[in-house]
Image (cartoon, rainbow, N blue to C red; front, side, top):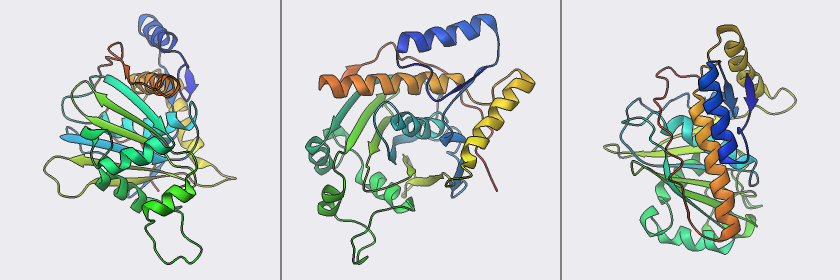
Length: 266
């Protein structure tokens, strides 16, 4: 079976789907095309890396492209030391609250690592520019002018890993990832490249995984990844609607990521 994007808008239904496939024992491929598209540079998270914080800067709206951004994060984060253990809480913000949080300068005070944000923007091929093209890296004032409705989902994993997903329409038009790995001075970062229309070959890259599932009866992509990202989206949207942090003890999804890299290469 193949399921494009998230499993369901509702956690209990998504969990039931995964429980059912486990009971019946069939292959189930799901998720976004972002984990399987090309990367620039063509890198993966080192297996068993000691990761402290992860980030994706992306485009799009809530309950849609946020899933793609979470899948971008999760396909890298799941390779961290100890394997995946699930997510403890999710909190979201939008508008002026985002700019206020950005001033904080760290995850611990309600923001995020500014070095990861810079690393993401530096990988973007669509980073907005002033009309003079006089400054390749935008100022905070320029960002506030261009991004009319910034949205951020912050999450903390059960093992302490910190994550931030930023939807920055008007600033970027692509998906970039960055991670802080303990023991490394510079962040690991990459552009998750989406070839433009009319070819949209990233969809073909995803369908090749669906075909592999149909032929072999086993998905090359862990279904637990998309179960977790489905839950992250649901909790993130709830947090935006309710204006408070959503505790997610039910999101105790445990799995080991595949060692082999499954993203497209030239």
